[in-house]
Image (cartoon, rainbow, N blue to C red; front, top):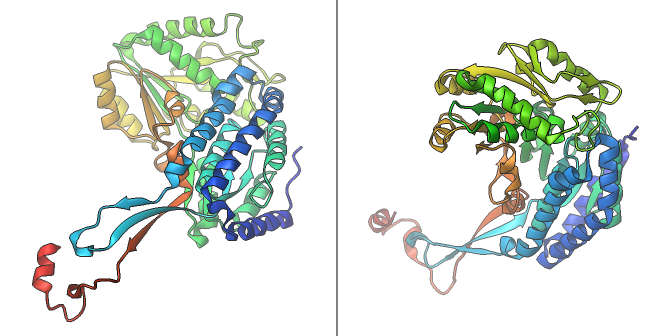
Length: 459
């Protein structure tokens, strides 16, 4: 059981970080770069303890932990080390005639003292990638990992304490009561990954401070397979995307929309490709993640009654294992279609015309991800008819793997985006600066506006 950090300790850390930020130490770009290098070294030192903790908490293999968590953080840190000097430099901007002979600049300055809250499903990536942005931008950070993966959260706490002074970066532990205590304090940015309900709680608590927020939430991400899709490729990539972290992924394909003409063929292809991913099944596989806790397991197995099981359907509560499962005959009003599933269960809907899919998706909350399998032209057509945080045509998940494009939600699935330079910008304020000379002082801007006719033409 994770021990809750006390309210007094939280207040102490907030005050320490405000005092440290006020010294101006974090504004020096060379200092930030040195901290990023220390961060990289700290992660290398703690890589094995983190990997061991992943296995203990989630039955997550080293390979999957590295590909979906640790390796992504290395990539973000490495890019920040190489580019933080460029990201942070002062930028000269064009100056209109009406402001001449002044010079115009954008100065990217740190927002200040920040709070980063992460969930349990990707507890390293979703805590440490935002931290890369905070460090590169010159902010301090209080980190709040999830109590549902206690060994990973403890390893993260020990790694951070071993790498940074607490007045700069510190970890706070505990349950939702600790979240409530954290949200009482004023921050210059809150970066939160979690459920829409937690996002609302954070926004309500921080509204009195007008705190800017980056919210990475979730939702029901549709996965459409059209009649002309390559069913083998589609089935393989969809099975992989759903089985990754056992479906406990905010951008996992949540439900399937299959064209009526290929529905049965896709189901057979899915079974075949799933067997290719797990030749000996998933129950005893060391490459299949288990469900995080019993209450989540019970919620997921409850969904099995919402349709007819046509593949999978087996489970073991003691092991917290659920077999990847396909459900047909699912009503759009069933519980499995109302809530983000967050597990290896796939309800199937069918369609005859793509306009049905667009109407269905647009009639619900905006999803975090949108997946379409079929021709490229039709994929672009569907993207043009809908909206989502991100999307893939003929793939799943992979948009999060490219740091050159933003990752974030829209509407109920979140606000703001990050990765690479966008992480830096998320923790920065772009400050406009006009530098005016004193060797000349043009009179046209002053009362009584004797040159107004000329000024009007210039404007």
